[in-house]
Every structure is written in C-alpha cells, then in structure tokens.
Image (tube, rainbow, N blue to C red; front, side):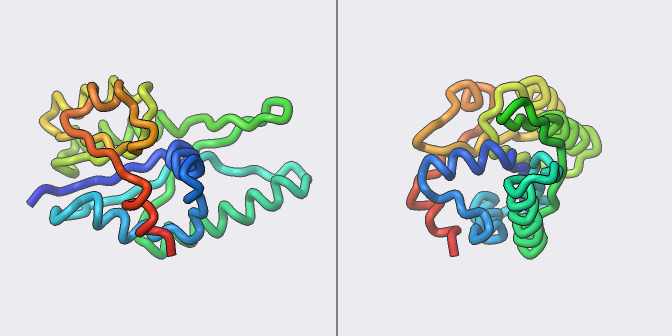
Amino acid sequence: MQRCLVLIDGSNFYFKLKDLKLHNLLRFNFGKFSKFVIRSQKLVGAKYYVGRIRQDGTEHTDKMLANQQKLFENLKRHKFRYVLGYILKSGKDYHEKGVDVNIAVDMLVAAYENLCDRIILVSSDTDLEPAIKKAQEKGKIVEYLGFSHKPSVAMVRFCKESRLLTKEELESFIK
C-alpha cells in the first residue's frame, strides 16, 4: 500500500472549479475528495495552499476574510491542513505570493524525509517543475491531478502519472 500526500494549490483549484461553476469551496467535501484521489492507498497528509487575506478596512476584504475563515473551518473538518502564503494588492488586483514556494518545499521535504511514496499534486503551475523533477529523482511518484476542461500539457509531461478530473466527478464532492 502506497503512502500518499495530497497537495492542492488553492487558487489554481478554485479558479478551475469556477470555470465549471462549482466554486463553492465552503460546500466542497475535501475528505471525500482525498479518499477518491488516493484510491485504495493510505493517506499520510493533505494540504491546501492559499494566500492569507489581510484586512485593509474595506467591506470587500472583510467579506473575503470571513469567507476564508469559513474555508479554513471546512478544511479542518475534512482533516486538511492549510498552508498560507500571502496576498499582494497591486492597484485593484490581488496577487498570491509564496504559495508555490510552500508547495515546492513540502514536496522536497516529503521526498527527502521519505514521508510518502506518492505525491498527488493538484496544481497546473509549471513553476513546480524543478521540485517535481527532484522528488521523482528521489524515487517518489508525482501524480498530476488536473481538470479535463483545462489540462496542463506541461504538467502531464513533467509528472510520472496524471489524471484529469471531469465535471461530473467534481460535482460529487459538492454538498
């Protein structure tokens, strides 16, 4: 039985679900999702990476922060740890920072400390390629878990295995 670590790039995940009109993460059953993606293997950890919302005194950020706190409660209920980067505001736009680095570090720690046999990576971020390559060199299987409506051809190429989720599969995790 393989030991599996599930790593989800939160922003990437949210926007792919949003494309499918399935983006209510407060109703998403992350526990059921992790059981589905590991199949009959052993789950040794599940992490969700996201930028921390900071209040700036506006109603918009107050609402965003309240929703993020509800998301964290949902993740905790389903035995997911959340790992925080930060959000940089540039004019009216928000940019997530530090999330990819956190994912890459956790992949490398898992590989070098032999914490798992398989890393299931839910991210289409090609910046993770060096960490993927190094984890695979250390004998770990890195599986790209993408979305059938917007697969990352590069991630399929980088990872030893890949699987694309359909809208129908994803709908089953929304309460």
